[in-house]
Length: 280
Ligand SMILES: NC(=O)c1ccc[n+]([C@@H]2O[C@H](COP(=O)([O-])OP(=O)(O)OC[C@H]3O[C@@H](n4cnc5c(N)ncnc54)[C@H](OP(=O)(O)O)[C@@H]3O)[C@@H](O)[C@H]2O)c1
Image (tube, rainbow, N blue to C red; front, top):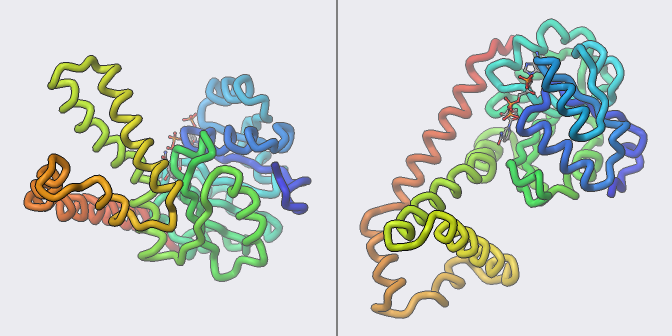
């Protein structure tokens, strides 16, 4: 349900509607945002036709029309394509647009240099659970942005937990931990499943068992949010028991250190994605 007065009459245009753009479109529609206020463009015409059929939203055949017609523009193309796509369009953007960039790595000052007339630039970092309204949605505002915080929060709150973060280290940690994080959790789930399968369960049985285990842990933590994860874990562990033995091995093998290295590598890639684009 859209509660923000400003949003009620606004047109939102998705410049690029692939995995993430469509996830947000689905999320918005599920929260009651009217389809006739949603617009999108894609690179290939066939994709646009498919999106129109699937979601009943409007499709423009070119980005110029989308920018001209919409109040809020969501930049949903890949970070490595973003400069090439928006540079020729930069003059069409005006100071009345709100621009929401989903692009990993690309900083607000870079976007500001590309879109000189736009004041309200926001970086938003959701994860794919936005499709089911269970996302962590990070955002940061540019230094020139007006009072759009409540609009951004009203737009995304129905789709999950909205977190404002300072651009830089905090926003990057949110990107790695919560957006890429979904991919990392699936990686762990694959190891779990494979081990269970190796011990006599079918692929489907093993997948269900793993999913329920992760879901159970998440729901337990959600239901007791005042209890730390450390405390919750202690309730599973009895000295010299089965879980204790497994956890001791995990700690001796320094799994935390390995994960930290992986997170740092992902953070480095986030930084690199921002650097491949001309910033002025
Ligand atoms: N996927 C995630 O989990 C995730 C999470 C957080 C943030 N993001 C960010 O979201 C953005 C999009 O990622 P994605 O995974 O959704 O990518 P994607 O699935 O490849 O979607 C990219 C979209 O951009 C369109 N496009 C490319 N060039 C275009 C142009 N010139 N004009 C109009 N549309 C154009 C593509 O059209 P066609 O379909 O016709 O090729 C496609 O619809 C990225 O910046 C990424 O960093 C993604």
